[in-house]
Each structure stands twice: as structure tokens, then as C-alpha cells.
Amino acid sequence: MKRSSIVVAVLFLTLRAASARDDLTTLKGFEHAFRHAHATANTDYFDPLVYWYATSPEMKLNMYEALAKGFHRIIAHIEVVPFAPSPERFAAPYHPNVQPTHVFLVWYADDVGQPPFSVRYFITKKNGKLQFVVPENPTLRMYNLL
Image (cartoon, rainbow, N blue to C red; front, side, top):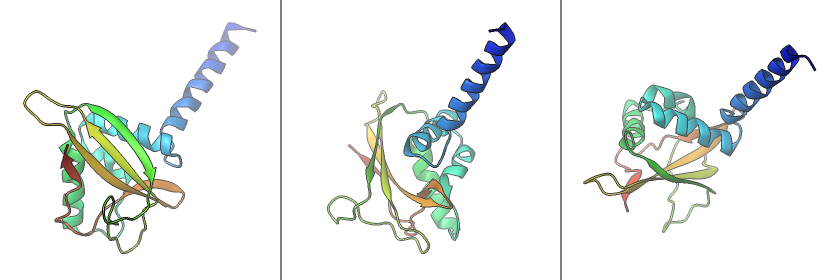
């Protein structure tokens, strides 16, 4: 095999792997995209991960606040579980156009002088891709100190 053929094959496989990691149609791709957006510490990178349709300014502010809460903190662990509403664990966030399918739990590591905490986001599948559900209630705090 010629050297140029090997280079083309390696480039193709690299591009294919990169696009699979950012594939918002799979939970693994969604998690990768979240980690990438988190590493930028810029809420603009989260926009494709959020279902913004029919959200009020208050809903957007609440979501951006939850996303920004973890900036400059290390992600210790992410767990994705199927959504099953229960008052003691996950109350369903009300959004007029979507129903959650999964819960995306992010645990942030302890920082010097800062307590560890977790953030829970709800995920839905709209138009074939996974996205965060923005809760309608602006007083709902999605983050909890551990």
C-alpha cells in the first residue's frame, strides 16, 4: 500500500471518529459534546445541546446559570439514566413542548475551598437529536451541593 493511501485512510478514520464523538443522536456523542462545551467555559458552545424552542428569557437565564455553575470545575463523573418521574428522585420539569427521556447527572469535583456539587439536566430527543430540556420554572435550581 502506498504511503499516500495510508495517510488518506488514517485521515478518514480520524474524521469519522471525531464526527461520531459529536453525534448528538447518541448518548455517548451527547456526553462528548457536553464535555467539549464544558472545557471551553463558554455558554455559546452549549447552544446546540439545548432545546431552546418556546423558552422565555427567564427559562434561558436559569439554564445558562446551571451550565455556567460548573465552569472552571473538574467533571468528576457523568451518569445518564432513563427518565422515570418520581417525586423523591426526579420531578419532571415542565416544558410545554417536550417530555424528558433521560436524566444527565454531572458531578463536579471538590475545588480548593469549594464544596463538590452535582447538576441534573433532563434530556429529550427532538428532530432526531438529543438536547437538554429547559425547565419552565425559573426558581427551579438544577444544582445541589453534595
